[in-house]
Figure 1 (cartoon, rainbow, N blue to C red):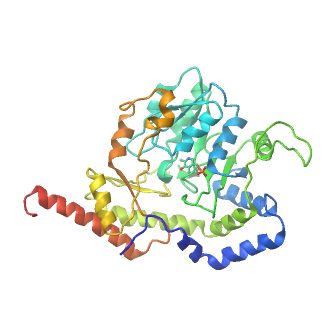
Figure 2: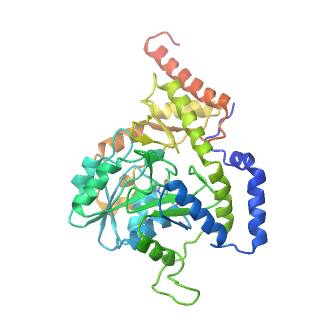
Figure 3: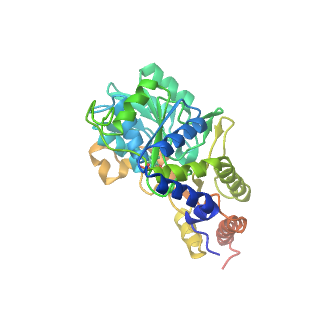
Length: 375
Ligand SMILES: *Cc1c(COP(=O)(O)O)cnc(C)c1O
């Protein structure tokens, strides 16, 4: 049986009639960038994230850039974030002239508040926790540190639409929440897209202009800015997905439960703590012979991935930041052991069982070898 790591077309098949109708509605409307469809989508996202304001933008990276810029983060400022994230967490800071400063993670793959505290300097302007794999970062501790040092908190929630921390949705826990609607995220459209969640009305008004060339109306420009708008087609598709989003999230969590039950006695599996409602954008197990297991699964037609093969501080792009191997021991240790299993709402029961069965088979073979009962 083939179990692809991603199969985005399956979600189109699942909602085909409604998505097709939504696309036709937009085509007929004659309004293709921003407009009513986008405004309705923003309202619905605000309800989901329990925040007063949402602004859609062109992608998740722009969401981070716009949030930081609007908060006044820029040239020479330091932004503390996690070293085991996607490139954009650090890249967004660099692109506005700021410097990403990394703080190591905990065993749950999220940034360690104790390490954040140690990374603070006079230049630190913001903390950017990443809700990695769809698991909320420890926001109470992070907000406390931010308050004590007068820092902004910009949530990188690109992997975590719908995740909750102590019962509250991520995105509304810091000064701004930045999300991605890219096809590889847990709420996705058929292209690039993103959004920003905000509590502050002045910040909302500022970014609303900022994402549209700094134009406060058709002809008058308040300040130089950029073009980062969402297309109506994406908004219309996102609105279809939002109708089913509770079920989508529930399915991610059910699959996570099945993996956990099937594997917890032989590999390290992620678990929610009582404060966390994770959405399992990725289901990351940790194993000793990760590369051998990945290859073993590939031979059986089971796709897996590594998030991420190279930690941010060891990327060529990060050379100027002055880090070296050994600087973030937890990140580097987990980096060798982590493996993401296929997880998406359309994954079938027999596919989940095939993944579990194959990992157990691998484990059994290793055990037999160790005890001399194999060949
Ligand atoms: C995907 C992602 C981003 C960037 O989102 P894009 O829409 O691809 O620009 C930022 N941070 C994290 C943690 C991500 O996973």
